Image 1 (tube, rainbow, N blue to C red):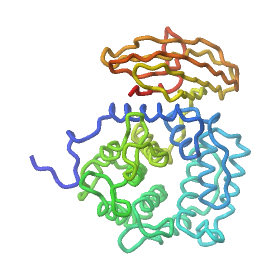
Image 2 (cartoon, rainbow, N blue to C red; image 1 turned 30 degrees about the vertical axis):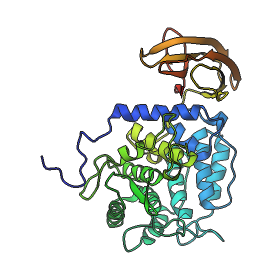
Image 3 (cartoon, rainbow, N blue to C red; image 1 turned 90 degrees about the vertical axis):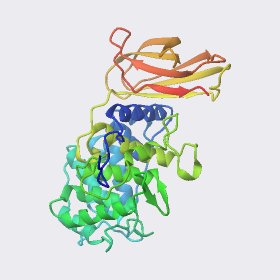
Image 4 (cartoon, helix red, strand yellow; image 1 turned 120 degrees about the vertical axis):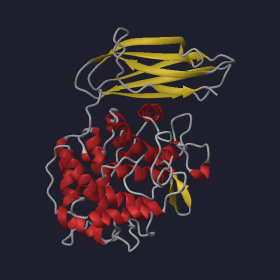
Amino acid sequence: MLILLGMVSSAMAVSVEDIRNKTDLTLSYYNQQVAYDDWQGLGLRWLGTEIAPKLEASSATIASDYARLLLGQIAAGRPAVTVNATIAALQGMQGPGGDFNTVGAVTLNQTIWPVIALNFAAKNGYAVSYDQADAAAYIAAQQDAGGGFDESGWGVDVDSTAHALIALSSYQSDYPQAIDQALSYLKSQQDLSGGFQSWGSVSPDSTAAVIEALIALGHDPQSPSGTGWKGNMVQAMLGYQLESGAFYAPWTAGIANSITTRSALLALGDLAQNKSKYHNTLPVTGSLALTVTNNGNLHPDSDTGINVKVNNASGNNIDFLVITALYDLSANKMKVYTSLSQSIAAQGVINAQYGLSLPSAGSYELRVFVWNNWTDRTPLTAATIMPIE
């Protein structure tokens, strides 16, 4: 059977179920983090996670900061007066040439991200008014002769080009040649594995950025149109995922990297939803935010302590059930568990502690579920999974 270069065979494709499972594993990892930054918050909210109680406070001084702040505020459902103030501040930074440059901040990312963030705000129902045509023209005009973009001042690279494509994806009919040239540049930077090069080596972060860009353009990253694509970029990115759900960077193999995990989260969300977060309305969340931590003693034949914190970000009381279980992987069922049924007040917080003795042999995980009740077993948050090793 002849397979054209750039086409991904169905045997190589990552299934929808596998993408969902990999995404759930990363959601589990984030349940175990006590706070989220704006980018993490955006990625998690796109996957239906309530982030408001755990979003870190952040500030802004330059346009790219305001864009990041705006994305986080909308993802967290901050008050409209707060979001509108950020929109106004960002719009006020646009110059007569369409760019958002300010003194000391004249790199292309100062325009790329405001375009992405302001268009995202408009998609989510906020009033936005800026010169889109001039901003898009400014971005397109910065394209290098080889098709790539340099958003940081450090030179043309994959990430910059992917981000420029996300910004230009709202204006595809106006810039078909620029987009085609940028895609050709990306193909030239792709490894046989499907991953993308970043300063001489394959990078899961850069690969994630390309996945986001292709989805924003309406392409399937597992079978993008045109010839010249190599391998499977989704499979290549997932190759950096750890058992915990986090992702590692090539220079720290086997060790979770917060930035790489964040990059993968943003790509996984678009893969799982089969559309771009930047072009769509954010989903409604279940209002409960979950944080699960342990005493670090997740080893066979030991005692461990689990701390579970539930935040209610809504204005209503919510009944819920928390189950902390020792899950037997070989039998595919809970071996032992403890549960707590409770009602949490509007804007309330509930903390619970559990102790478990871990078996000396076998294949087990600790799992924490939040359901509405025992009868329906409707999940109110993503499950948390902690390997025992």
